[in-house]
Length: 278
Image (cartoon, rainbow, N blue to C red):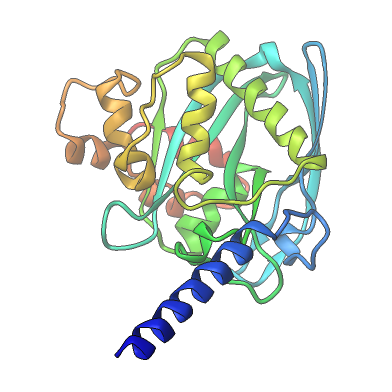
């Protein structure tokens, strides 16, 4: 009996050591065999009020895996940023399983233009996302900066995910501060890669981090940041979503944009069309 207990104890200790070593030894890297959509990361240059972003993703999709690969450069003034939208894309039947990202609107001579920022895993070739492995330093963190025709159409047209676009009721200067804070983090990742973590370094936890850097404690960490599909409750309670109704399901129906997104003709202004009120 003692020998059996000792042997079990040894096995448990060995497993703990293996898990500890496996978790602590890996170092994040920007040098791996990335998938085509993750091969290039955004390159940020901020000079006072001017910002230049290279490697803005602007793919055209025939399907989720069949696309025309294109990266573009965007240059504008941070002071031209006028708005920020909070976007949820629900990728499972249960509401809590969703991807959260932001889109910033900035004024140009041709009207408002939009850039989306999506915090994701940076996938290697042959890699698939798993929430479990996401807690064990298996994925690098990626800040994808992309056009809305890329990140939104990918989800509405090809993944068939219900997508909710919430215009945030914030002052332009706060949207500008938030965007600058995000761009500074994106720039750091160029030389200081990080591991993604399902709970502490994910899409919603990073949005919360950037928002709280502007106003401390505005987005409390908790189960609604761990399960982003409930994060629009936080936005509604904080007054970021301007609505007379307080029932989140009614609010969600008002900001579900899939039907509008799918009805827009090619060549039309996609960003304007998905924001058009019925």
